[in-house]
Length: 337
Image (tube, rainbow, N blue to C red; front, side):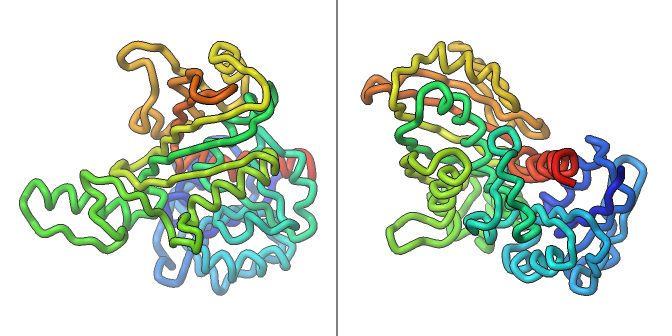
């Protein structure tokens, strides 16, 4: 059976990846439309190697008769149009933060909690976690199955592509400006991003955490286990594509580095590259364009009881967003449609 599919936010970084991955994985599509805001009407996006789609106006589109929508516009656009699509009978897999913590909406990483998708029919909406949460959850799930996780301390090193094409342009422009001695112009980020790191992603909350840090905490609890204590520091770094996470994990039971390494090697969606030599680990540059989550630097933390350290990297546009959404759609049509 084939399905009628809409991609909302089709001109953005993630929307383009969604279209590419739907084609790559030969998702059963009978009709596909690319939707975006009014300013993008008439622009063109690719679907596979030989099909060009004209972008249509999201505000005027009738979702009646469409089976699925993969959505990654701005949060404000999603808040407005995702419920409209869902009410018309179209199941929306939404990649924005607005629906992730709604108790009636499943938050899905297919390798971990695909069974939670059964609740999609309450609202006709399925939420996709943030990219850093996807990476962290996939790396932690096989370890949590071995020895229950008590506490997680995570620091993220997030590429600018998560903030959109304007953010990527700003990194490029500032880098060039430094080399030619032009003034540094800051528009997308609160401080210079070129040759710098910024410990500030999204708005600050009353407790001093940023919204991005809060999201990682609550999303991991919803996906993996509400009993896990999580603290996060999210940092924007001058990398175009690929998020990296330094994760310190404290377990309820003893777990050794070799045992953890073996469990991770046998887990879906993970590639372990962990040799204690030069180049024996993976960095964001090497994971760009790849569908896997890479785990390196697996070692015991002897400062706490039952502690481990991990280095986790992944392409935030692919598995962190677009691929996770497409895999969710595949599971949906396979098990629930």
